[in-house]
Image 1 (tube, chains in turn orange, green):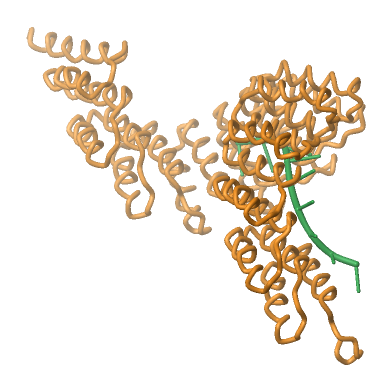
Image 2 (cartoon, protein in one colour):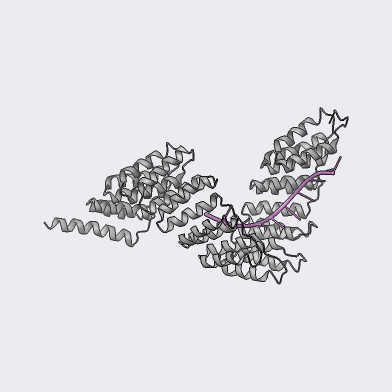
Length: 480
DNA sequence: CTAGGGTTAG
C-alpha cells in the first residue's frame, strides 16, 4: 500500500480486522490493532468491535473482555455492539455469570441493552443450563423497552430444551403469536429437540400450516427424538421420507439415524446406513463410526466393530479415545479380553489418551474373561496413567476377584474404596459377598452383610442369595 | 469500503 501511495486509514484497518475475523485469525486481528498507533491511525469503536468479534470467534473470551475494558483508555466509547459482541464471546465459553455481569454494567456505561443484547445473554444462560434466568431475562425485556424477536424466543426455547423443560418450551412457542413474533424453522427445531418423539412428530406435522419449511436440522432433531424414545423404525422412516420432501440428509442426520439403530440394538440397519452414505454423498465422520461401532457392541458383533474401526483411516476419519472406548466395550461384550487389551496398547501407540471409561471397559473385559490378575493390574496402572478410577472401576475389579474366587483381594479392594473417597455401593458389596461365598468364607460374607446398613447400602435379592449360599456351602461341608 | 443475537448427532 505505501508503494501505491495510498495511506491506510481507520476504515482500511477496520476492513482488514474484519477480514481476519471472517478468516478466524484472531491473532492477526490483534496484531493489526497493535500496529495502528505507530501507523498513526486512530482506532474507533468499529475497530474494537471487529477485534472483539475476532476474539469471540477464536474462543478468546478473556481477550474479548480485555479489549472492551481497554476502549475507554484510548477514548473510544463502547456502544451496544461492543457489549453484545463481548457477551456473545462469554456465551461461547459457557460463562453465563460474566454475560449477566456485562449486562448489569451497561446502564452505568450509558449503553442501552437491545433485543440483541438480551438474546445473547439468554443464549449464554442457555449454554450454562440456567433456564430460569433465561426466562427471567425474557420477562424483563418489556420494562427495559427491548422488544423480543424470533431470535430472542428461539434462544429462550433452546434454554428450556437444553434442560428437558419441554412444557416451558412449548408454552413459549404458543406465546409467540400474541407477542406478534413469527416462528421460523429454528423455533420449531429448538422445540422439537425439547420433546419426546410423539410430540416431536406432532410439531413436525404442524409446520406446514405454520408455513415453516422443515430443513435437515428439523429432521435430525426429530430422528434424535425417535432415537431417544427407542423408536428406531420411526427414525429410519423419517430418514427415508426426506427425499420426498426434498430435504437432503447430512452427516448429522445419518449419525442420528445410526445412533437410533444403536440404541435399538440393530446392528444390521446401522451398518447398512453406514455403507449407503457414500452413494448419498454424505461424508461419515468420527461420530458416525463411533455410533456404528457401538451398534455392533450391543449385539456382540465385536468383529464387525473392529472392521468399522479399521475402515476409519481409509475414509480419512480421525479416531478419538471415544472410538476406542466403543471398540473395547464391543470386545468386552464379545468376551475378547485379549483384543480389548490389544486395543488399549494400540491407543497408546497412536497417542490417544485412555480415560476412566477406557480402563473400566478393559477391566470389565478381563473380568468377563476370568483374568482377575490382569484386572487388578489394570486398576493399579490407572494412577500412573493419570486416570482416576471411579466406583465402576473398583466394582469391575471386585467382580473379577469374585469370578476368580479371590475373596482376600475383593475385600482389600472394598476396604480401599473409602480411602480413595469412593462409596462402595450395592454392586461392590454383592460382588465382595459372592467372592467370600466362592472362597468358603461364610463368616466374612455375613460380616459384610452386617456392615451394609452403616455404609447406607441397601441389600437386595442378590445380596441375600449370595450370603445364604455362603452359609449353605459351609453347612453342607460340615456334615461330612 | 468496517462491528452484535437463535437450531441438529456420539
